[in-house]
Image 1 (cartoon, rainbow, N blue to C red):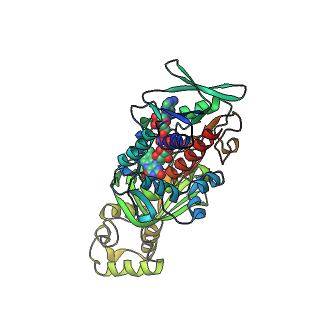
Image 2 (image 1 turned 60 degrees about the vertical axis):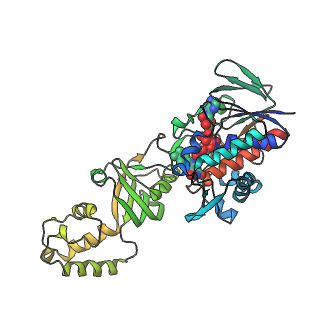
Image 3 (image 1 turned 120 degrees about the horizontal axis):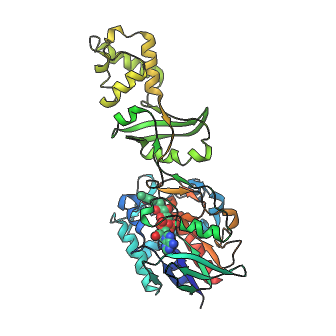
Length: 411
Ligand SMILES: Cc1cc2nc3c(=O)[nH]c(=O)nc-3n(C[C@H](O)[C@H](O)[C@H](O)COP(=O)(O)OP(=O)(O)OC[C@H]3O[C@@H](n4cnc5c(N)ncnc54)[C@H](O)[C@@H]3O)c2cc1C
């Protein structure tokens, strides 16, 4: 019986160990935390968006930001539908919400962990908690086992590196996987926090902290180049901007954003300029004797009005009947194209995912086996793959974990 050791008891590590054991191997997990799946507990705000029910595989893979081509083989071998069937087979009921996001029907991430842990026990996979791996051992180009940080060594036929990335290090993903891969001659790309807030030097962001804008459209530009454009929801924070649209935009910052970054918000995307101008004129007619600062309440959220007026260069105490046509034009432009300067992203402590990792061209995409070290396999976020929000990142962990576990068991 082949002995397979899995480094990391997160999403990909649990799936890898289950898959190795289901395919006849004796599998063991080494997890430095006191429990399995510490990050899984906090996914989807504690509800765990396990995957996305998007029916078209090509469309599904279109949500990968990096590693789409690399993911084809493992995804087609173990798709989102396969994962849903697998969890339901373990007795976990699922439900699908807006955007095809799949959650446990109980809304509890802990139920996903319980289902996977239960399967690990059934398969008699040994789980070593509070056990940190410090190194993977190699001899003559083949993996021979692992060295634990307490000095013990454990021999094996195959090792699966599923130690996660660098994001939310409090959950255990502190970048050990990148170090271990690098020590074995694997190239590791530059690493960036992704699915993360954007920072702005603009003082008004702080003033607007907590303001959430719905049904707006947002464009991120790097110099003159459009990097991202989307419709939805965003939020001002004391450091800049966040919320679903911003997180998605953040995935493209390092890929395309080498120039000066700016975000433009269309606060009224449903109204074209002509219609919006007519709307503003109508609002002005019913408020001719008011100060401009008191005349936009029907159009915009209260807290953003002073910021919009200031950006438009209008005296907030000017009477509406004194507003010139040119001032109205600038006001309209500010509402349609509210500019925010961006000077970086939030850091790894708050990033949902790490962008970058062990280079995919050095890993066999169908088996996840290293092209440099025989018997070494990769799974999950340690690989240079990342996706948008919506369950795609966890599916990448399930699919790569499944492929690695099966291949490691088969040898
Ligand atoms: C707040 C938040 C919410 C998220 N929500 C979602 C969501 O709803 N849907 C989605 O698809 N994705 C979500 N993600 C992303 C998702 O959690 C990751 O894609 C996924 O957990 C990656 O799985 P992994 O197994 O590669 O890494 P991890 O889950 O991070 O597991 C790696 C494990 O390895 C262990 N480890 C590390 N080094 C060692 C070592 N030296 N020795 C022993 N053990 C070690 C760590 O302790 C950890 O338990 C979210 C991420 C965050 C931070």
